[in-house]
Each structure stands twice: as structure tokens, then as C-alpha cells.
Image: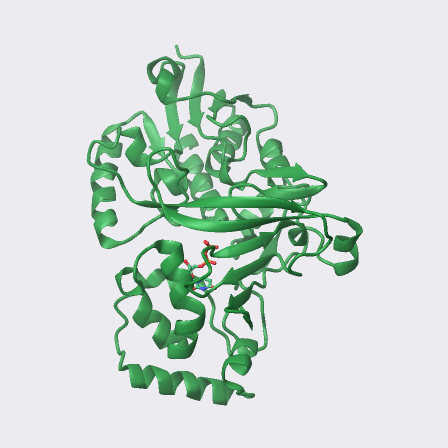
Length: 373
Ligand code: UDP
């Protein structure tokens, strides 16, 4: 008999949720992670009282009441509302695309005027059935906004022309004919008070966790410890890239502690021109200290510039490149994964999917329910 019912590889959101559910169903679970800490890419690190999102900014938002009820068992959420500012060569615009953006771009005042302007630009571009990100963007917001707020940012972020990217990526962003700078169309939104690391630690309470533990270096030995394995790393890495590597985008973070209370006055500023080398600057304190007075009580601030790059071995994979070519390769890996009857593949890397946090949690809950039934 194996010592554990489940070995969970990866202590990120998928792994932590699955481990919690299995443990609560009476199973014995061992969680391992190669990093010296839990929480995967939602990990937050305390720097001078500021929770720094070390592997990229994470803003929790969901329309799924079951997921919201679930996460709020492990953390209290603040009322942070994401409203990024776009900086195009020093011109500032509101995001997502809404009446404030249209007013600044064209001087239009009413929703009818904004809709007419978008319609005119869409008609001039002659797009009927958008086949890629560029066509999708122009048909949603017109050419001016595409040129100033989408094209440069997207090409830096993905390292590919917008004509070669799938349309669904831009549909993540709302387009509104109202004065509303809330980036997400979600019923529930916020940041866990105390940081994401504390939330994941709460999920893993009472569960055995081994950190700095390299799964592939001791795979046979670790697999033998459990009846079933939940693997949340990259699916192509699991199979030693035998069908060739899937493409990912990686991000390099240049993080600085500054001796001033307020650098940019907002959590996220996106640099949407092609010339600025970074995609965005995150000022971490504003995720938590939402008011000027509170934020300025802390004399320092931490900022991270994000530089996007093509993933290569040794980098952290962040974004799957969900185009047709990678989709076809992923299908082949998925067939191999299905033959591994002892192993469940889950999460953004395990399923090669541009998952938001709430979708990862919903997927782990569904898998756990199926598995533990
Ligand atoms: N995007 C853009 N301009 C912006 C912000 C986003 O063109 O100022 C596009 C870009 O293609 C990006 C996509 O919208 O990849 C999705 O953005 P989101 O903010 O959801 O990306 P994430 O936060 O996951 O990096």
C-alpha cells in the first residue's frame, strides 16, 4: 500500500485546491513544489509592508458564486477594483475601453457619438468576420484605439504580429459605452488581505508540504509514494519535450524599492506604444492601500517593470501561446497524458490554457469532485 492517496506536484492554486478537497474527503495527501515557497505564481512577498506580486500581478475576479464562496473561506478580500491606465508616448487613456477612453481619443461626449465613430472605422477597415486579433480589435473599437492602445502592447506581450494571434485574447477586455473604468465584468473582485501566499497557506493547513523538492529529479521514488498523482507543471516538460516544446511567453520583472510614497498613482500602467521596452509597470502598494492617504502613510513603494519574452529552457513559463500550431501539438501531448492513467494534469501549465485564477479553482473543484465521488 502506498503511503499517500495523492501526490500533488505544484503548490499553486490548482494543487492547493485539489489537496484541500482530497484531504477534507479523508484522503492522505503530499504536496511538493520545486520552489522554496507555496502559492505558485500567485506568490506574494512582503517587502516593507507591501505584498509584492513576485510572479506578476494577480487580481481576483469572478462571476462564479461557488468559487467566490470557496476563496473567501481562506481569505478576506478587499475592495480593489482594477482600472489600469494606458500610457501611449505620454498620452494617458482609461482602460478598459469605455466612454472616458472614447472621449479622450475623439472628443466624443455621448454613447451614440462613440458608437458611430467605432462603426465608421470598422466600416472603413471592411471587416465582416474577424479572423485574428487585429481584425477582432478593429471591429470592436476601431482603428485609432487599435493603433494606440492595442497593437504595440499586444505585439510586445506576445512577440507576434496581431494578425497571427487568436481573436479570443482581446475579447478578455470589455468594451463599454458607459463611464466605467472597472477592467472586469465580474460580480466579485478583490485582493486577499494579507496577500495570496497567506491565502494558499490557509488552503494547505494541516497538509504535508515538501518545498524545494524537484519532482523530475526523484520521479520514480515520489510516484511510488502515492496511488495517484496530480501534476500541475508544464505538460510538455512532463513528457520531456518528446514531441517538441510548446510555446510559452515568459516575463522578466525588474523590481525596485523606491524612496517615495507614490510613483504612478495606480496599481497598473500599461505602456501601449511599441517603443517603450516594458509592457507595464505595477506599483504593488495600490493593490492593498487603495486610498491616497493610506498609501502615502508608507514612505516607500515597490514597482515592477514587466518585459515579455519568448520562453526558453530555464525561464518561467507564464502564458501559453494558444494559436493553432500549439493547439495541435497540445492535443498530441493530451493523448499521451490520457495514457498516464495514474496522473491527473491540471492548471494553466498542465492544461496549456490561458486560465484566470477563478477558472483554475473551478476546474480543480470539478476534478476533485469527479475524482473523490
Ligand atoms: N491588451 C492591449 N492593451 C492593453 C491591455 C491589454 O492590447 O493595454 C490586450 C493584449 O493583447 C493582452 C490582452 O489584451 O494580451 C489581454 O490582456 P489582459 O490584461 O487580460 O492580460 P493579462 O493581465 O493576463 O496579462
